[in-house]
Amino acid sequence: MDDGVRAGGGFRAVVRAPVAGRTWREFGHLLIGLPLSVLYFSLAVTGLSLGAGLLVTFLGVPVLAGVLAMCRGFGHLERARVRGLLGADVAEPAPIRARKRGAMSAMGALLQSGSAWRHVLYSLIHFPWAVFGFCMALVFWTTGWSLLLYPVWFWVFPAYTDQPGLQLFQNGDYSFYLDSPAEIALTFLVGLAFTLATPWVFRALTAVDRVVVGGLLGPSRLASRVSELESDRGVVVDTAAADLRRIERDLHDGAQARLAALAMDLGLAKEKATEDPVAAARMVDEAHGEVKIALQELRDLARGIHPAVLTDRGLDAALSSVAARCAVPVRVTVDLPARPTAAIEGIAYFTVSELLQNVSKHARARVAGVEVWKSGERLLVQVSDDGRGGAAMDERPSGAGGTGLAGLAERLDAVDGILVVDSPEGAGTTVTAELPWRA
Image (cartoon, rainbow, N blue to C red; front, side):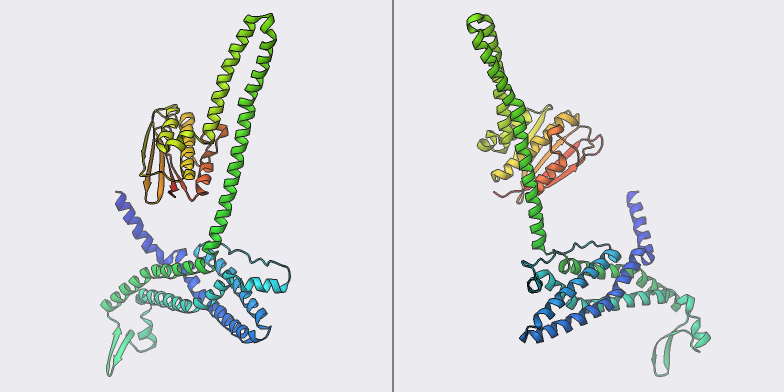
């Protein structure tokens, strides 16, 4: 039943494609591309030739800088055209910043900009492609629709030209016309085939335009990577600052406050030691209990910073320790040929710890599972439960102090990791984290 529905939908999409808005926008893009590319090509070639010829004098430098600035303007127009007609959102390249103020510094920055020279390259190489795309689009469109509608307009030949139909060829005294019903029907079918194929030809041609515009007029891979690393660095700094604030808050509100109260209690016990030994002994006994609690809090805090078991014995033992503290039974399976780097181990450990806290507090699950394995050069960590599901990326899985699934995703992204959440309502939750191995 589903296959039949999909087949019917696919057939309707093919039939509607020739008159769909997308097809007409792509057709307009291919038609407009030729006159614009002629303008780009002619101005770029003229400017480059003039600038190169004038390089023997100082005038060549400002001319070339002007050509680069002009081609960057062409890039703005092309990105807007692709965005409006093809729906492809190509990001702006990084702005060109001169190190110093002044015209000379600005011209030097333009001449040294790889982005500006890519815009010049686009202005040059897009011209032959635009000619090809224009011709292909126009030929397919006119041929398809004219043949498809031939049964409607073929009557003009006998009425106005003294010919029985459209003449395909003539060899001496022999001429072949499309005038019989069978020939008219065959012409209609050929036109139908061309018309149905035309949208896919348009899509293939405009797909090349998307690639070329994105590759030459968008930000370079290096610039995108630098921007990504700067963003990741900000996430790492913010995360480290948040962790420091959490540690300071836990020390101030927990162990520090408890130890301060303990010091006061021991002082009172010391004063009562001679007057009321029994009361003093009771106070010392209470202080002993407070010391145990303070020590446990400090151990928990140290474990939260970096557990010793993770350093000494690796992920298997560390995750088993986390699972033992979970409110529901957790099955842990770790299948690793070796240990990844300490940083990746730490991120994997804290990711599982955070997710298991979510299971304990919010999932209403009966059982949970943790699986860790290596796939290629990636470390895969999966935490699943049979709870109520419905987890979202903006949910705070570990209560008020947690970073939430969005926060976990940001932490993983900072090391080129990925977090995927599958949590349908009432069907449990599966969270998969993918990290680089980097052993």
